Length: 415
Image 1 (spheres, rainbow, N blue to C red):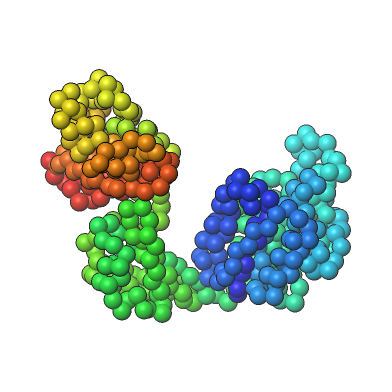
Image 2: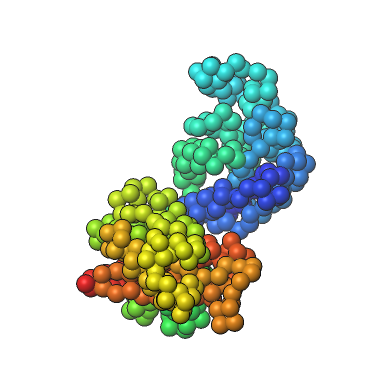
């Protein structure tokens, strides 16, 4: 089965929102073993939606659309799908009854505008919405299927997992795709692929690399007739990967770095504290976005000025005079002192120049020092980052967590 995704919404084209729905569906299609060859974005325009669906049906067996199923005049996906199949919109009686009951249960008076959501392409089946009011659409013809879902991520995800996935699984041949992500630090992409050698040419599992801030990701995907068989293929390949490049392996899995850090801290029974200058609290924000992070996050200090560094972190005046606030020495002091002050086993600190002004001849804009202090040792790394002020700060926060995780894996047992 070959699939395409069509994301509907003028706000997507204007860059007002990020298309997380397409990412979510892409990942799910891979899990199901369905090949995804194309993703398209169109605005809220009936003719262009119809054209995108027609063109997609010429190439793919399955079209998944998101967005444009609501009650407002610019919600025209249902009409676009109907036009693509050359059929009119008709009121679906079962969808209408479901929608009426839903609205009444919520104390909302049914209106022609709201009931418009029950107008589906003639011959289509409807999909209940576990979260919202817009029914989904399941339309089949000549072995081709179009599935239209709401654009609100929570609604789309619930509908896809509860209604769409079971239908797709019944139609699949039984082939599944499973993958693992191996994350490496301290080795570049070309060096990694050189050491992997002929493994990179494997047909099944397949290997592919992706460069991330401070990391190189290796995605290994196996296709088989069963989940157990696919996992066995992955296990075999993982063993070969570990033998060749295991010394640079940071983690396995594509979870956000803050989740991996939290998992490792829980395993150790350790806590972390942050002392941030250039990142202005971004590291602590990332850490505390993880549910249950109060178990291991002691807190953070944003020491943005020299005066604050001295008053809250006791950075010596002579250290600042000799080395500067943007220095390995300052970062080292901040990390070790916040660890002691907040009674944590790990302290992480950042200082640097985010721009667009500032910097020094030997420390230009983008210079960042990150220090991680554990009971075993305190390690400082210098980075030279590029991008806008926001990008430099966000990348510094991410790199800080990468450095924390590396320290936890490499030297957590000392001291």
